[in-house]
Amino acid sequence: MEGRWDDRSAPIGWGNYGSDERSGRRWRRIDWILIAVLTLVSALASFHDLGNRSAPQTFWKPGTSGDGFTVDFGKVQTVARLNLYEGPGATGDSKMEYSIDGINWQTYAEIEHKVSRAFTWKSEDKTVDARYMRYTATRVGFRMYEAAFFAPGGGSPLPIASVEDNDKKGSLTEGSGALVFDEQDEAPYRPDYRNSMYFDEIYHGRTAYEFIERMEPYENTHPPLGKVILSIGVELFGMTPYGWRFMAAVGGTIMVPVFYMAVRGMFKRTRYAFMGTLLLLFEGFHLVHSRMANVDIFGVTFTILMYYFMYLYGETKWRNGGFGKSFLYLGLSGFFFGCAASVKWNYLYGGAGLAILFFWYLYRRAKEARENGDRGYAKRVVLTLLACLVLFVAIPVGTYIASYTQFLQATKADDGIKDLWQYQKNMYDYHKGVKEKHPYSSKWYTWPLMLRPVWYYGGKDLATGDAQSIAAIGNPLVWWGGLAALLASWFIGAMRRSRIVLVIAVMYLSFYVPWMVSPRSITFLYHYFPMVPLLILSIVWILRFFEEEWPRFGKAFSALTLTGAAVLLVWFYPIYTGLTISREWMNFGIRWLDSWGF
Image (cartoon, rainbow, N blue to C red; front, side, top):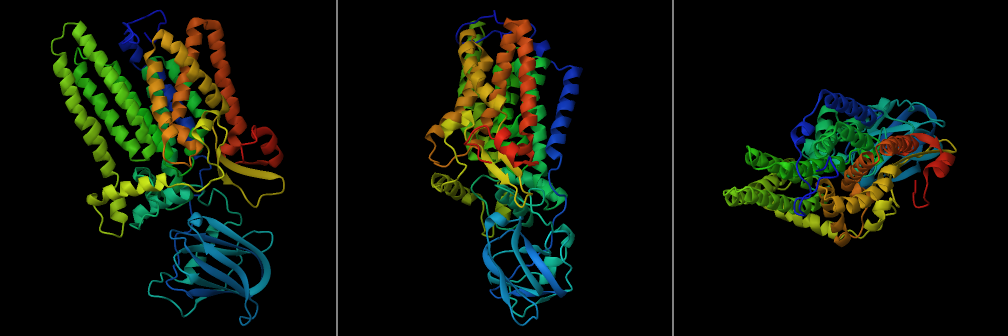
C-alpha cells in the first residue's frame, strides 16, 4: 500500500488497496482553503508586472518600393534616437534620412525589417540636428505601427508639426504616414520586455494575433492549439504585451490546482499535496513560462492531466460500478492527450507511457477479476479495448483536427481537412531539418543537470553596471535534488513495489527517452519541461519515505527542503521575472556555472 511501507503484494500488483482508500482520497475543507491560497499566490506571481496593457494599434503599410513620408518638427531639433514598432510581416528594407532645409538629405539609418522585430520596439541611435526626417520603403513587406524620435537623454518623444506622404503610394498601401505618429504616448524611450515581444513570443504571440485577424499564419512548425489559447487573451485585452501573455499566466495559474489535485489523488494526504504544490510554486521554469507568450505551459498542464486520469483508471476496480467509471477516466486521459499533442508534437512522446500504463492496469484488473471468480472479466477486457479505439484514437485525433479550425480559416489558400496531412509532413520535415546552430541549444544528456539554460531576454540600454535578464532556468534544488530523488525512488520503490514510483518512472522515461533518438539535432532545455513535475513528485515521494521511516528527522528534512526551495526562488527571482540588478551580482551570485550565459 502506498501509505504503509509494510504492505506487500505479488510483483504484478505493486501494492495493495487499504481500507482507508476512499477516505484518504476524499477532500476536506483544508484542501479547498490551501488550493485557493496557492492558486492566488501563483496568480499574483504570474500577473505581476506581466507587461504593458496598451500598445500601438494603428499602422501604415507601404505598398511599393519608394512609398514613404516626410516628418516636419516645425523647427530644428537634436535627434538622438529613433524607435520603431513593427507588426506582422516584418520583412523588407527602408531608410531614414534627415535634413535641416528640406533640400539636402543625409542618411540617418538603413533598416532591415526582420521577423524577430514583430511587435517589438527597435532603437536606432545617432545624434543629428534636423528639422525634417524622410522615411522611404525600399523593399516592402512590413507594417509600421509607430515611430518616435527622442532628444539626447530620453524623455518624451519630440513633438511633430506635420507628416506628409510622398506621391509614390502603391495599390497595396494601407493607411498613411500620419498613423505612424498618432500614438506617441505608447512610445517608450527604452524598449524592454514590458513593451515588446521576446524570444518565441514573436512566433506564438504573433500567430495568435494572425488567427484573430484571419491573416496568413507565419508560424506553422507546431500544431495550433497553444496559439489558439493565447488568442483569447488578445481578444480580451488587445494586441498588447499583457494581452498576448494573459492566457499563459492563466495557464500557469491553472497548473497549480491541477497539480495539487494530482498529488492529492496519488498520495492521498493533504500534507503531501501541499508540499508538492509549494515546490511547483517555487519552481523557476513554471514561473518563467507563466509570464511569456509561450505555449509550453499549456502542453505541460495537459500532460499532468492525461497521466493523472490514467492513474485514476489504474486505481479504479471493476466491482461496485467501477467498470463504468473507468471509461470516464480513460476518456479524459485520451482527451487531454489530444490537447497536449495539439500544442506541440513532443508531448506525443507521453503517449507511449500512457499505452504502457494502460495495458499494465488492464492486466491487473483482469487478473484481479479472474482471481475473484468473476466470469465476465474477458468480456470487460474486450469492451475496454474496443472503447479505446474511440477514447485513445478517435477523441485525440478529433481534438487534434479541431485545433486547426482557426488556422485553416486564416490561410489565404482554400485549405481544408484534406490538406492536414501535408501540414504534418511539413512540420516533420522542418524539425528533422533544423540544423542551424543556436548559442543556447543543449543536448538531452545535459538537461537533468541544467547545464545550459536558455537566455530568453537580455535588457539593453541599461545604466552602467546594471543587468536585466529572463532565462529558462529551474530551481536548482528542484532540478538537482529532484534528479537525486528520482533515482533514489526508483531503487527504493522497486524494493517496496510502489505503484506511484512505477507510474512516475514510466512517465519520465516516455518523455525523455525519445529525445535520445529524435531526428531533431538542435534541442533546448525547455524540452525537459514535462519532466519537471515528475521531479517534484519524486521529491514528495522521498520526503514521505523519510517521514514514515524516521518521523522526527523526516519532518525536519521536509521543512528544510521546502525552505531551501523558497530561498532559491527568491535568489533567482530576478532572472525569472526580468528585474534589473547589478551586473556584479548577476555574475557572482546568480551565474553559478560558467555555462549559464546570461
